[in-house]
Amino acid sequence: MNTWNYTRKPDFILMGLTDSKEIQLVISVIFLLIYLLTVLGNIGMILIIRLDVQLHTPMYFFLTHLSFLDLSYSTAITPKTLENLLTSSKNISYVGCFAQMYFFVLLAATECFLLSSMAYDRYVAICNPLHYSVVMSSRFCTTLLGGSYVLGALDATVNMLCMATLDFCNSNVIQDFFCDASPLIALSCSNTNDIEFIIFIFAGFTLLLSLITISASYMSILSTILKINSTLGKQKAFSTCASHILAVTMFYSTIIFTHLKSNKSSLGKDQVASVFYTIVSPMLNPLIYSLRNKEVKCAVSRVMKKRERTLGN
Image (cartoon, rainbow, N blue to C red; front, side, top):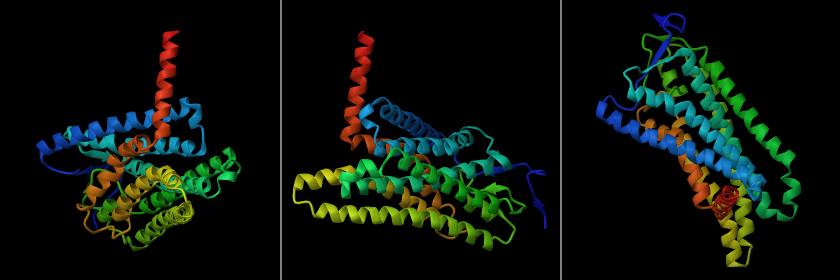
């Protein structure tokens, strides 16, 4: 069988989203605007949290790193996608393709565990408020963050080691706009059953563990909120969770649809979901956490007033 590898044929070809030059131009403009908003929004969120002392709490500690992850995995995908849309070259090297896939899985899996850490933070804040500062100590928050990165790295490493064993026959054309496991497995002439099973198990473990943590946290939160007699108290408790619930729903619904299914079926149909969680979702998270959050709005106001006073002096 005629096989090739990166020493004989160094490039994959990313087919992208469409062959139409006119549509490619429109998509590239949209993606560029989305990416600029992603960069500005997430860097802005990080800076506001860093500059405002009142936001130096566990919730915003995790939100800082959520913004960093969103910015990072959008950067791992979008610039190369824009290059392919705007130029005639659609090539990506073997090493570049696998590096893109590794960092994307690393950052996306880490975000799953970070979102579950944020849910646990909300659980402690609402269900055990008197012990919040003791339970959510700086050391414990750092441990949760470190654990998220370690588990994300484990998932990405297993994914990479599995994919590195594959042989690719005849075609090097990836039917997608970035390097992901599903379209790469579809190109392989190796027996992929074992590899697909291992990747499925680790992806399933990441999603299930984080979703179980999030679900358990919010069931306890809901139970506690329903026991609150004051309508104002209920509204205040719900408002502290609303942004996180929206972000979790948006992230998990698309990523589950795309990945927990057969790797060789309906690759084209998955692209809309892939665009959403790789390019659109990182832009929306800062908007969700700022527009629906009075603390962030007040923090922006305080930072701007402080800057005006500094310039005035």
